[in-house]
Amino acid sequence: MSAGVRHGIVVVPEHRWAQAAPRWAAAEELGFSHAWTYDHLVWGGLPNAPVFAFAPTLALASTVTSTIGLGVFVASPNYRHPYVLARDAITLDDASGGRFLLGIGTGGDLDSRIIGEDLPLKQRVDRFHEFTGLLDRLLTDDHVDHDGEFYATRDARTLPEPVRSRVPLVVAGNGPRSVALAARLGDAWATYGGKGDTVDEWFGHLDGLVARFDDACAQAGRGSLDRYLLLDSSPRYALESVELYAEMTGRAAELGFTDVVTHWPRPESPYAGSEGVLEAAAEAVVRRAPSP
Image (cartoon, rainbow, N blue to C red; front, side, top):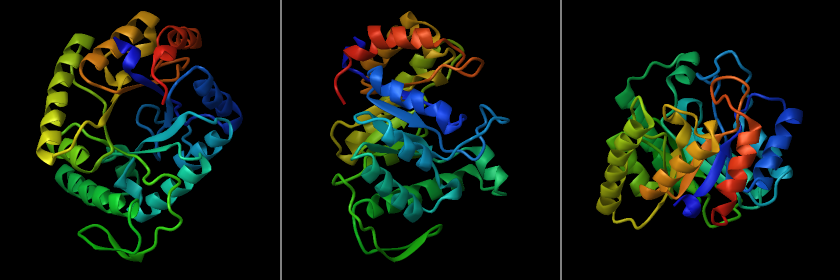
């Protein structure tokens, strides 16, 4: 059942490049369709760990890979103007030969607090909507004028054009407004999934999110869009075993997800696991997936 799903993997940006480079190369060799990294000042999952910036990391990753998609999961308005992010996106798309995937989301509370920001959730979501709409224009048009509540541009030039006609915009969201935004402006939807104390409960809640996205797509008059599911926000790490990974990807496929994403195993939590299991899962499940 999971054979029709594409597989992705997150390389947490905690290692110096000499140590990280082999992982990016191996992700391609193992058959993954896309590889991702985070965009944080400090990641709440490892608050005492180093964090490297996503754009230089992905530019470097493009030099040790040739076919795999390279993405950020996810960039946010917390400390970035959409015009600056559009410049990064166009540059990364050029460096990778058209392989860059631009994931965007509202952003984490920790990052915003670190830079002294204290916006209520509604205002942060309002900002994300304006951010996404302007970013969508900047990735498509030239000479962009915008005067909004949070952002402004004056005759913003967007040359050079992307390698492709458009850098894919993967919009993350779980709440009604963000899911509707993904359906309206995104090239794909990403979600960290449901809630629950067990995998079954988690997938049960996820079923409701999928229905919400289906309704939003119908209201927006959009056809079928790619759907990315971050498996490891469930109560269990997907690469705990080959069997669990196969089960979870199969259930994701049944819910209509086109893509699943897991994490490179770490020696301790979060995502504590074995690279041996990763390699076995790649052989048993990932390599059966369609080509990117």
